[in-house]
Amino acid sequence: MNPSGNAGSTPAPSILIGGIKNMKRIVNGKLYDTDTAELVCLSKISLFSERLYRTKKGRYFIYDKFGSVEYIKPLNEDETFEWLSKHNPDKAIELFSERIEEA
Image (tube, rainbow, N blue to C red; front, top):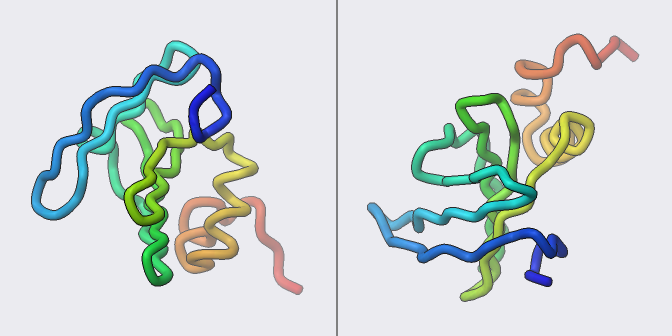
């Protein structure tokens, strides 16, 4: 089992490109690649940083980094909405406006 808790993940080499590591992981038969996915949001606190990506097929995943430990964690739409609500409410409104109602 890997750090993301997915037994079906296969590690791949990470390559440093312009200060951001390119990371690829296969999770449940799906390739998640930070180089080909769109960076949606960055959340950074001290040594801990998370980047939310969207693949060309519309799947979301988190690239987590804490010091020298890094991994990819796929998210479903509910998890993505919750993550964005906490880390970037404006982006949550932009991408998930149909889920939000005025208080």
